Image: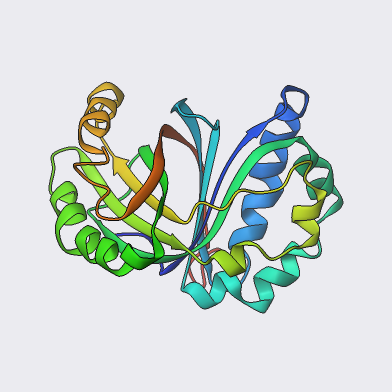
Length: 233
């Protein structure tokens, strides 16, 4: 079992203090249900930082890459609700990527997550992907306490497209190009120690990594899943 589909939207951000209460209400009552109602979107999860540069991590799982770049999602982004326009003004330091799920391994979902945002030289991208897929991530997925291991690769062009919701935020987005997501289902302290020890440039993110990878630790706050067909009828 891995992620629910082969497409994903990954978002990290802070929230201005004055908008915190409204963010929680909007995100839980309107935004996550709205997203998983888009055809092809399957599940949304929100995490809050235990130790990270950005306080929130949101992961939306979709059927495939065509879903997260397709007309239904784009139409939703260009028709934000009044509550969305009000809430997103409080977003700060947004990093958002529309992604292909390149690797997804695991046994289930974990309440703990470590994310790594990083970049790879274009000339080394194929070799890097092969190393992660064939050697490095499968080894991590077999470790005790690890529920899942995933590699997301951003569609830089799709991630950079302007839309009404993006324009309503106070600051421009960053676009992480490569993302590792590790899910843990044990105690928080051992999971954090494991990630600090294992998710290093030399041990995991090679070859071709450029710059400094950004590691963050998060715990699950909320999840919203698309109802199964016929559920509730």
